[in-house]
Length: 233
Image (cartoon, rainbow, N blue to C red; front, side, top):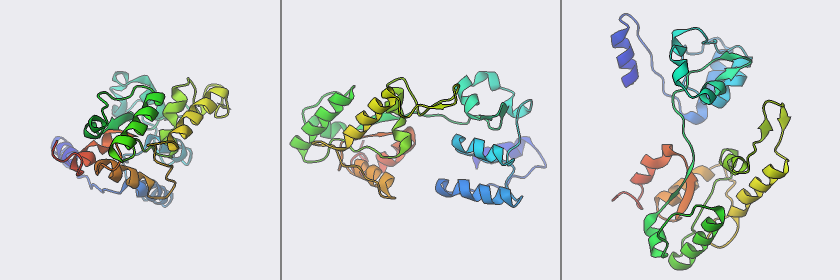
């Protein structure tokens, strides 16, 4: 809303109607609206939606417009993710990464002073946390997005975009996915949650101090600090 107000002040005569749609509904809602020729002028979208919407003709290419006036200041790979068949359909707004987040208090109670830096160390620490505190040391997500870092760590991906070839069954990919799979069984490692509410289960458990670590992005930090395990920090 602050951006809308700023825009309207600098563009007299233009009024912006801001509509907030929950993330899990936004893709389908835009798809339906665009199909009925009633889509909004601007959409804040997940970059992964770009190819499908562009292929359907729902998006306008932005190349050569003011929207990409500062294109050279962006990381090239961020621009590439907003492209489809040589045209650019989006402007990078934010980017992020995943990291291990852990409860220092629970780790300290288990006698662990530093965060693990390898998967093997994470497994060892998870077992120690379980033995010393009674709570699981690690709980990871089964969603595919969270599996990608294990592929990247082995120097591979699900596809080779340049060669237009699937690489998910390559030896490197199999090795990475087995490492990921191995974090769902063992002492202190919470079993895989494949329910529809698995994301919420993991976040609530970590925020409430019922699990000592997880892998997550920066978008959850504010929610973590509202949890009982971190609200006084």
